[in-house]
Image 1 (tube, helix red, strand yellow):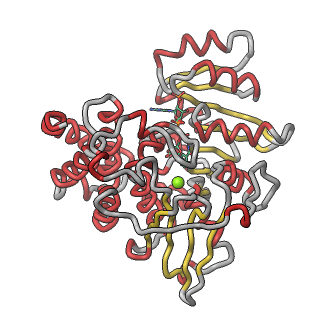
Image 2 (spheres, protein in one colour):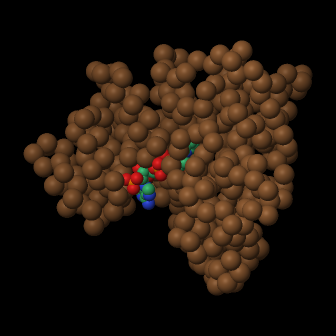
Image 3 (spheres, protein in one colour):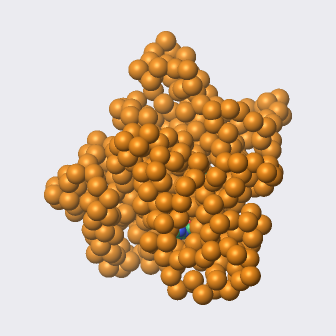
Length: 391
Ligand code: NDP
Ligand code: MG
């Protein structure tokens, strides 16, 4: 039986992963399931899949988790160290689906054991791409992309030579506000930004889709995962979300990955890799689809994309700064302290403030990444009074 663990089991990706596992009884042994505040769901999942251990990231919730698992024989643990210990438990396949930079350390631990890491947590690659890749190489571990665009590129590259790749185009739905007049964006509310036209995802990534910070992270993720030069990586707005990415080769051929917007496709590909197995996803009826449309992203609507270009050029630990500032800006938006457009203004300001800081050119280590993340969050908070005063 394949031993698997899921980090971020209670989130959108985690639930979809368990949906696939649950359809194949007897094939998987669930080792560790981790969550955050949603103790009821975590305990229910641990019971249903008879996990060895359930871990909440929040130490103060340990009592609740223990109570919810009472009498089951399933171990309960809590806190950052417990997450790392869970990642140390022998497993064949680990899903990294914690949201945010918090997903980095458990993923690194898993790689150090040579475990195959199915990576939904794009923030890991944005913050510490070179570190993650070096750990994987040093321990013979494999990282499989779960982000739908990167899974699509990965699949288009099967049997191909990366040197023959001329360009990669990842598609963007354009998010909740793609057709809004620009002058209305400043007043967009959290509720409006939290509803996605095509995909059903966690709240944070849904808001990041509306602002295109998600696509910005994905451009950087593409660079880090596939080792492509930034000028070979582009994005196009494709409102139907049916083509997830395209790979262009030196002979002019463009290979597209087409499928219904259902994350179980990319999760299932990573779960079954290198095989293909049946997946419970809708089959596209192209005649019913009728047309697929594409348009260039408007830089005035999506300033996050230009910021991503800046980060891809700068490299070093700029990705960790970008992500840390973005996470903090998102916290402030969700809390109602700043407006929708202020998120990009805040991140741009942090990148400016910290440009030239020696922390950004430090070696790629977990401590240095954490430091860059920390100073970025602090700098974002420093911008708050000015931005909050304006909105
Ligand atoms: P969700 O917000 O739905 O779930 C996040 C998970 O992480 C939950 O289990 C949550 O626990 C847990 N969590 C939250 N904060 C922490 C923390 N500080 N430490 C440890 N665990 C924590 O997110 P998604 O499933 O949408 O996304 C997960 C990752 O996958 C993200 O990196 C996202 O960018 C990426 N991704 C998601 C896609 C999607 O379709 N959803 C598509 C492509 C990539 P709890 O809820 O119990 O508090
Ligand atoms: Mg994606």
